[in-house]
Length: 104
Image 1 (cartoon, rainbow, N blue to C red):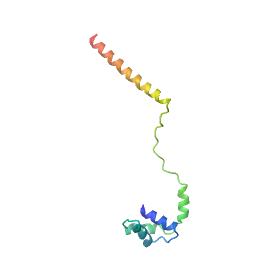
Image 2 (spheres, one colour):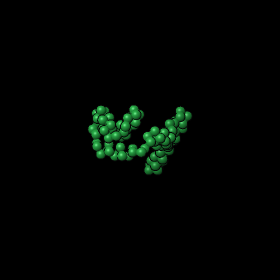
Image 3 (cartoon, rainbow, N blue to C red):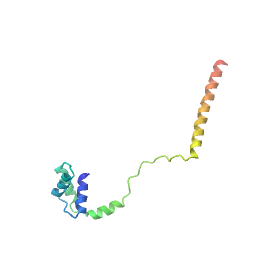
Image 4 (tube, rainbow, N blue to C red):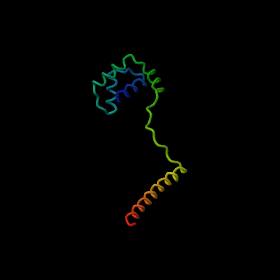
């Protein structure tokens, strides 16, 4: 990712995007340079209109976040708690019924 950032920075500053400049930016940031990645990036950017790519990317749909359950509103909390309490009461009644059947 740092290679792409270096290329974008060079583009923004109006500098030529070449292997030497990308390597210099990464070194200046304290990173280690992988020459194969630098060459691959420069080759991939040959003939690409970066301004147009940025414009079209800004309109690309964002990755959808995982749907989350809506937070319960104050009115919903008592209903959820009431259901939980009803389930517990039902289990208690069933347990008592079972005990009474044992001791008749």
